[in-house]
Length: 319
Image (tube, rainbow, N blue to C red):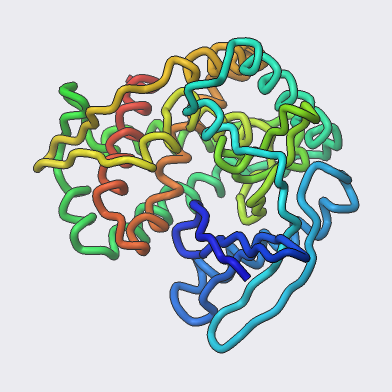
């Protein structure tokens, strides 16, 4: 059987297994190392896929098998041969404006199905989100000495612009989440980056991969913010490439395909203007939530870069 390593996952491994008789995607993870950010997250994906197969047929890939060997657990998924992730499509030189429009329409259609089942929001969930998804993630990332030394700097240069550290905005951020009143919560993807959103031009259809459910708040605004994280903040595109970290200065010398901007403009039109402030704050916190994954995977430069990007976003929003 031919095995090809695929991208995705800081602490897990995703591989395409191909033979003349069957092709499938195997996602595996250590059952020993970094269990909280590895195995626990992997298992939450497995259980969410299991439920969504029934709740939203065709919106997620089918689970074919679950197993383990030695100190590794794995699950196998159907291979979506006619699909590509949106990040890869937007990075290509063949994508057209018509393609971008079709992808945006299909994504909103998939989101509308996924978010159609609402339930009463938990009062106070925003405050718990701040504690667990902002403060705790910063605490966890700071257990890595190299990141902690960088975090303790007062200010940074982000692509040549002065940006204060996050400490300047923590009180305002805590107040925002303490006062956050969601009118409902919904079934969500939990991690719908453009890399985790597959599109088939022939079927004009979206399939979501790498779902997870350990988020403190289940709100569609988090899903929207993770699309913006990739289409506006360009997380996936930058993450695939090199960043520059020199002292307190972070930057990149990348030429970004205009297709990302075109897609982002279309996607943002679908967000209610009254919800934009909340979505924007959630986008900034996405880059905080990822920090332990980057640090524990040894990708310290990316952790530093995206931390400063979070500071940059918060400074724009909170002033």
